[in-house]
Structures are given as C-alpha cells and as structure tokens.
Length: 613
Image 1 (cartoon, rainbow, N blue to C red):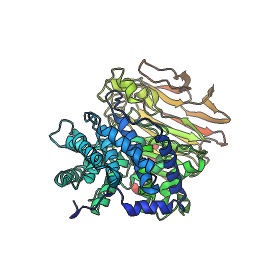
Image 2 (tube, rainbow, N blue to C red; image 1 turned 90 degrees about the vertical axis):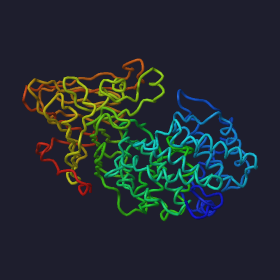
Image 3 (tube, rainbow, N blue to C red; image 1 turned 135 degrees about the vertical axis):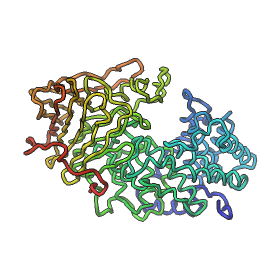
C-alpha cells in the first residue's frame, strides 16, 4: 500500500493518461483505430437493454464479461470525449449489476470479472456518480466481490491456483481493492498482499521460455489479467512488486507472437479457439520491452482487415484497456522494427513445442508446429506429438481446438476429470481421434505420459519430440521429427521400436481440404486452387485410407464440417524398429525427396534455449 492514496481515478490510469489518449489518437494510427472501434461499440451499447442476471448453466461469466466490455468502454469514452451519454449509460449498467442477487462466487471467474468491471466504473466515474449510487455500487463491490475472496469464504480455493484462475481472480480482486482503498484500507492491503504472495503459483506456467501450457487462448485470458494486475499495482503504488519478473513471463510475448500462423489464425492446440483476433495485451508487452516486433501479428490483422471488421472477437472486453497499454508507446507500429522475429522458435516447460516458418508477413508461407506435453495438463488434449501444417495460404493439417464447454457439461459429461478412461477423453476434439498423432494398435496415449522436446535446430529447420512416455504401454521407444526444407516442403519422420509383441501403427492426418485424391504412395489434397501432396517415402507397404469425420462421432460431439482423416497404416514385428517418412509438398513447390535421410538422433542438436535463432 502507498503511504498516501491518490484521488480517483487511480485504477490502471489517471487523468494525465486520459489526456494523452485524447491527444495521441490524432497521430497514432493504432490508437486511433482502437479509439474509433470503441466509439462504434459504445454507440451500439446505448441502444441495448441493461444487463440482466442470466446464468448459462453454472456460469454467469458471459454477463460479467459483457459488463466489463460495456462499463470500461463507456467510462473511458466519458472521460476522453466528455459526452454525458456515455457516463449516464455506464451508470445504468452499474446500477443493474449492483442490484443482482450475487456475482456467482461458486464460479469465481464470474465474480472476478464483474469486480473488475464495477471497480473501473466506480473509479473512473467517481466524481460523476450521484452520492446514493456511489454508495450502492461500493456496497455491491465490497459484499459481492471483495468479501467473497476472504480465505474463510466458501469459494476462495483459487487463491493458490496454478492455472489462469489465479491471475484472473487476484487481478479482479486487486482492482476492486484499489477502487475502495479509501473506505477499506486494511482490506485493500490484505488483498494486495495476498495477490503478491500467491501469484507465483500461476506464474510458474511461463517457465522457462514462455510457452504457455494452456494454449494461446488461455494465454490471452490469464496473461491479460496478469497485465491488468501489474498495471493496477504500478499505477497505485509505483512498482510491480516483482510480478513482471517471473521466469518466462516477459518471454511469453514471443511465444504468442509465434502462435500467430501465416493464415492469421492461432496455433489452436489444447482448449483453444482457432480465431482469437487481436492480442491486445501484446501492446503492453511491446511498450514494456521496447520491442515493436512483438506486434507483427496484430499489424498483419490490421493490414488485412475489412471496414468495420471486429479484430478482437476473443478480447473485446479489453478494448478500453488496450488504449491504456498503447498510449505513450515509443513506436507507432512494428513496421519500424529493423529485424523480423525468428523463423524458428521453441519453448520448453509443461507443454513444450516448436515452430518453423518460411517467412514473416507472407500469408502463403509454410508453417509447421510440433508439440509435446501430456494430456493431463491444464486444458490438455491427447495431442502430444501432434503437428499443425500450413502452406500456400491454407491450413492443411488442422487442430480443431476446443468444443464449447456448456454443450458438453449439459450432456452430463464430467469434462474436468483428466484421469485415464474419464469422460474427457471420449470427446472427439479432446481425445486421440482428432489429432495428427501416431496410434499403436488403436490405443489412446498414456494420459500422464509427457512428450519432451529433445532436439532442435533453427539452421536446419528441425525439431524432434521424444514420445517414449506417451506410448509407454505400447512400444519400447518412439520419436517424431519435423523439418522445414529450404524449398518450403516439410518432412515428417517417425521412428519407433516394438516390444515383445507385434504392433500395428497408424499415422493420422486431419484436414478440412475440399477433396483428397489417393494415389500410389501419395495423397493429394485440394483446397480451391491450392494443393498439398503427401508423399510416403517409407515404408513402401504403408496402406493409405481416408475417412469422412464431419458428422458428430457421439451425441455430445460437435459437428466438424468438411473434416477428413487421412491415415497411413503399417505393422512392425516384435522387437523390430519401424518408422514413417512423409514429405508434404505444397502445390507451389517443385520438390524432390531430400538428398539424404538421417535418423532423428542426428537431427539438429539437443534443445537448449540458445538454439532458437
């Protein structure tokens, strides 16, 4: 706690920053876009009915997020433009949520996001709230928010959470504490101290290189609230209490940059939506580190946007905060960067992965991603050893990402039990059937088995994952490697050694290509005018098959329009070694097989961070 508490507004910003936004929107194109987008959204908000208490299954989260979107946008524009309509409508929303029976603390994310929304409205519009409303809003924030977070409260198990819950809930509570610090200084001190002392449980996920185990979508969620917490503490007390120095935290901005693929979508492993839009927190990272190259992905979306297109579908509720993270930036866009980001990158940690691309700023570039990890990780899928492949502007080898939770929970599935044989692994998009992985005798991977990134080279465009633990009940050893070749084709190479019994091995490739034509030892995928040919270099006896996977595989599964599964199958005798070598050749490439093929043990070098060049 600071020695003296500054007047409102003091949460995340102050009057000088509002003034800076008002000035800089005239010269900063990105800031102007964010501001104009907020103005358009606010005009629509004025026509909407006020928020109502409406749970979706066990969650109030959609209402809380809409409250954050509306109140932060309206309050920001009220401060910047002086238009009384925006302040008046923000007050309507504040009155509505303050009159709710609760903010659903049984699913505390709902409470945390609502607390942030109300704290922003209360703080930014403090001098414009009638005294009676000021009292009512503060009472709701205290009783529905802050007091529900006390350790003795029934739903405070998130305090030591090791996933995004810790970041979101501590962030929302600290925001509320800062807003009410005048009236409740001792409570505010406890909440801030508690966050500083416990955020490390969540922040361990970033170590050592920034690869976020829950995938890109949950990086946006958890890290946006981590940034909100940092921003709030720095503005309130003058320092971040070391919460920006966790191993891998700042480096995670590089991870997210690499998760933007050439087609403008996310590398959608784990529970992730394919289209995540603008990464608004990246503006904070770019300003914090002085690195405009971190904005290459955002700049590409700006360059390709259509008039009035919403670029941040996943994060519209943070639009107002993005203006705060962008203002006073020392650069106007990543086009000023003299050096492009690395074309090859890897991250170790709970869910290690590596990516290689043929270029930046080219939507037709080849991209190959390879991941390890274990299925029982946070929001995990049975995707250890899976790859994602793009070339010539098409995502050929897909990862479907998540199915919406309510559709599964309403079917009676226990979605959050990751034990072997649990409901989670029956879900098509989560289990082994929908991922570009190997299968041994059709069995699922070992749930707790972790694939480790073993070898990597930026110079040769190679990555190798060791999957011994993933298939420990099926084979003696197994590894998968990918190589991005100079001509933009990709080699996918698998090696395994059978145990005392023979094994049938299946290679899975999921695609949404319009059509697939199977030939001798190859298959050609067609998407519009583009093609990709998968050439089976070995084994020569591999059987190629194609399945239509577009219909739901079970009553609770979502449909997957146009999805197909291409498989290669071979058999390996007991104690023998086997492998696949598949060359993926984009139609724009006149490729021939590599001049020499080497065992995976000779690819690259042991994965260590100075290999990512």
